[in-house]
Amino acid sequence: MLRSTPGANPTSFLSNIILARFGQVVMSTGTLEAGRDVSSSSPTRPIFVTPGTFDIFTVEAAIPQGLTMTQQMWALVKRRAEPGLWLERVPIPEMGINDVLIEVLQTGICGTDLHIYRWDPWARKTVPVPLIIGHEFVGRVVRVGENVKDFYPGEIVSGEGHVVCGRCRNCLAGRRHLCKDTQAIGVNRPGAFAEYIVLPMTNVWAHDPSIPREVQAIFDPFGNAVHTALSFPVLGEDVLITGAGPIGLMATAVVRHAGARFIVVADINPYRLELASRMGANRVFDPRSEDLHAIQRELGMKEGFDVGLEMSGNPQAFRMMLDNMAHGGKIALLGIPETDVAIDWHQVIFNGLTIKGIYGREMYETWYKMTVMLQSGLDIRPVITHKFHYTEYEQAFRILAEGNCGKVILVWKDES
Ligand code: NAD
Ligand code: ZN
Image 1 (cartoon, rainbow, N blue to C red):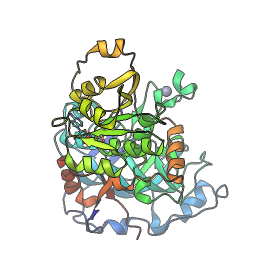
Image 2: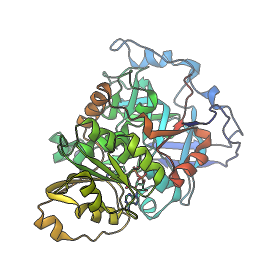
Image 3: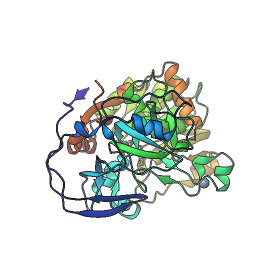
């Protein structure tokens, strides 16, 4: 693991008066001080209040260092409609009576954040500017709204990044991952690449404290992996995973844990194929230089893969998967293609394939499954390959863009 030195001061910069609206958060910053020490603006002690024995006023009184809602925080902001991200001082978000204020400890950088950084066509049509980006995080509860009874200051939590309407047919039926009006934190509402984030209490997940901090930080993409990997039974089945990005790598470990027979993983990046072997793949390969039918024969497989997990978003990878499935095989599609994809529909129809699209995590069954699998021996730590202090975000994004990495973490608060 590469680890950079945390604790460096943020880059010095000077900004003009800005007045902008971040969803519900009104930003208003004057001329900013250059190179201010972040640590001095963060609470230094965790606040522990026994559950059920506090109200908003006692909690407020307990906040150290005079942290108030008018104070500012560092955040990575998509400030302008052009490539780049900007580390800025912005107000700590305001909270309502059903909300939880969380001090962010660590965040994971997702491919989505890279799309927003690069300002590609998807980002241009999806992301309102300005916006604090980021959605993978672990943090500590600082303060809770009056209506919040299930969380308390000091608790270690992550946030489900999809904020749902609660009123549509699927929400009312308990299928919140299928909400027709889903909003995503860090994509179309303020995100987690900041010292603090506010979330509705319905989106907060309290962690088992025995789970390592950096694993808690990536529950969001781990949840994508678990939702996809457990979409179809894999016990005793042969599983093909296309794409060994962080999500494909975690899915490899999950289907191994869940009792698959052969797990074959495809990627075009040797670094990631090596990681896939460490995560439990029986066989890894580069589809540009090896034929999957030959690999099936090598393993003694006769009828094709029972389950396919598409995690690359690459059209050729998807077509290769369709060509290698057993009749009646099941495919879970998580990878997001950048363009329309043509496939041979005869393979789907005459081979009786099932194809299921996956978006996000099931609320909160996926979160439950993640926790209990970690408690029962699943280890996804090898997927985390790099950690940077948040002021080194440019370097972190560069590593992610180069692709010779697993999960890249930004540390917002040094807990050592
Ligand atoms: P990633 O971009 O890090 O990983 C994709 C991997 O696919 C890369 O390692 C790349 O080398 C590999 N790849 C490219 N061409 C390939 C080919 N022809 N054959 C095999 N592999 C190939 O992304 P990630 O963060 O691991 O996410 C995986 C996918 O899931 C992405 O497409 C992402 O956009 C998508 N995603 C979907 C959801 C959802 O809710 N549906 C959520 C998060 C991410
Ligand atoms: Zn809904």
